[in-house]
Image (cartoon, rainbow, N blue to C red; front, side, top):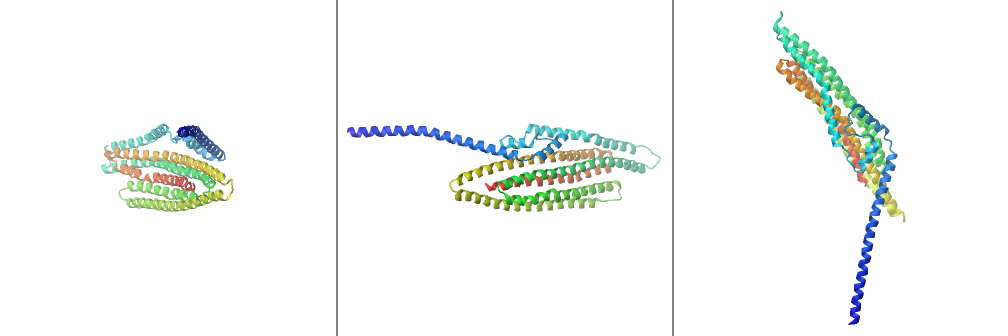
Length: 403
């Protein structure tokens, strides 16, 4: 009986000791795990800082200077490197209050920019209406035709100046985007090579060259001249009732749509297929390398493999952050000219609607047709920007599969 009691006491004591040891070890394990996570986080942060210091963002920062000079820095990006690091740190990439304030400011500035000229057009329409009702020694029809012709030519002269300004803005925006492509993609492709995505980098390099040369030249030397031809045809069509070039305008519109659609289809088909195949090859290659290091290097293989994961992680974070900043920059580049074209088109339609009741049909139809043709310019900007954005997105996502 005594032996049974003693054995029970011994079991109880052993259980108490085991519980005490477990309660001591558990916090130690938690503490060690926390310490490990902190060390990994610090190592990753140090690796990111070291890689950022080795990247030259000076050429990319010059784009920001251009935004500051034009007051179009809608995302308030002051320095590319600082913005990249803030995104990696988890800060919001977009300041919405600054974004909407900048958009509103640009919108008001554009209205004030075009309001005086469009007011002059309305004034010309009013004068034309008043003069056409005045008595004359000539026949009433001849007088009306002469008055409307003079007023229409005056409006054409004003429109030529404004359209020339829009063409320069469009061409400048395309040139700015090409410059950004030539600055941003070498950084992204270098980071891709750094994480072992050599095949993807090799695929994207010629595609980037295609965007910055052939596609940009296509819009500069084909689409913009198409718009200029449409503008001239609109002037001639409304200049005389005996000359009709509506079919030419219809042909130009169809040619524009088919040309842009064909370029888009070919570009995205080639880029998507090549990007996916390159990413798959890179994924298999990097995983094979990591397995080889871990399996065939004695003792240190596991540590080297883990260190490789750390380097890859930091490079991928930087690459994606740089890509996101590039997306913000390209959106900033295309928004200002797009807003200008949209505001100008809407104001033309408003002026056309105002002139129609004044019996200025030629001027009214001319302004309405111009407002429709301007979509060619906005489409050129959107097309280049969209190709740019898709290219960045594929670079950001394709090479991530190596992990």
